[in-house]
Image 1 (cartoon, one colour):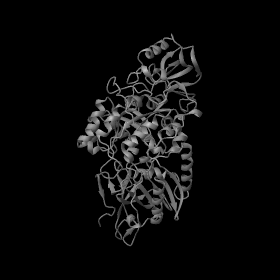
Image 2 (cartoon, rainbow, N blue to C red):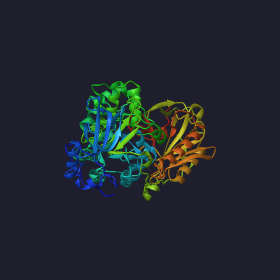
Image 3 (tube, rainbow, N blue to C red):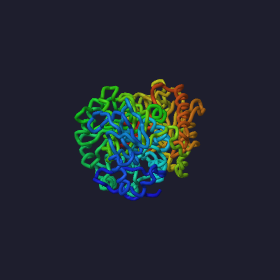
Length: 613
């Protein structure tokens, strides 16, 4: 990967992001762009002259109602654009191209404050094709999923493919690879590994700091990651799931100033009071928006914005992300102007992006035109001053390194490896799924046993679950019991298992679980459904075992077939594969499973499945 020249930080901690795509839309500006994206020389002169109407604007949006996210008001005005930037608001009668917005609203393009593209199971360029039609013109992403599989090779791939996207994909460097020392993943990234990326023009900070013990204990490498990021004038993201007020004090002291893990209004306010910006998450597995809305009011709304974190592709393509969250908030009674502000300007400010998120001179011309401030469905999308034709979006086939394409390295798994020893009458710790949340319960339950081992009991919704290390052929396998998946027959397997992405399997019988493991290995990663000794459906994910190389439309068809088959085996209403993927994440309370065994997040240690009698 070619590392770009260092960006000049205009005024720490803010900086300006600019278009660095390989095929720039404004090639005549390339020699006039200062690091940081400021037009200098003739480029700046053209913008100033267009603002005064001494030169013709490239595009004029006429007769619309501008949504002002600074003052939370609307007013009628024209919007003038030159060289991809807004240069004026007022009366602009002439332009090379005119868009009539009579009776419509003009608002900034939506910004997703935190999302993992890999969780959509498609590459960045395909992700852009699927999402930009909903008006999301910029996303802030953390590539820690692929980094946990392939290290810097994975980060390089994401940066290079993101350059082929129509939306702006801005990246935060993964801070915790691995997330914790309590599981085995594919790579380790130190501060020295990450430092060269700080000069890349689409890297804008350090992503969610999940290893909070490393912060609390002042781990030298973690502190160096934070130090080098803040000295570069960039922001550090938090991950404060279940943290106490004292731990939040430490996070904010360490200049970790945003978080997307608040799940109650009380938790949200605890963060705001400590100067921590709250990213209100609404994804597929974690749906926190309704719980957090009571905390938001006109006095504090600038301290809140929307994010997605993780969302499955079929849902994302159908309903969008930030547009969906803002619309849901409006339906629940939030002022539409506040919701739009949270979806645009607030996210830009939160991440130190100085030139996005508003309809104002000098800002990037990422603009939506819609006929309603309640439905937020854009009729026209303008990206970098260009009216997008959604039928002509770039559709680039990603070039995937071989090391990323072949990433499943398993030792042979046998029935013996799946066994969970339990005495007759012995209670067991069971992972309890909480609907609509990635937080789980730690439940002590009576379970079914046979010949001294646990036996899955689908009638009582108690299934066997195993996590197999798949990066280094160590043969490490953790086994546990899960309740709440709703699987009635067969088994499911996935190599999407946050954050180390080992192979996770859940099932009603050992035979189907073993076949699911074999099929996942044969595909070199993906999602699998097995029942009665037969593979019924699968979605191959050859890119690190977590993304597909195919166009997003084909992946959606495969997912629909998968979910259709799953509906015959499980209770409706749950995205079981998404839920399963988070049952392996040992930084989210309370009970999770890693390749090293059952993990108690509250005590931050592995525990036995069987409870001493």
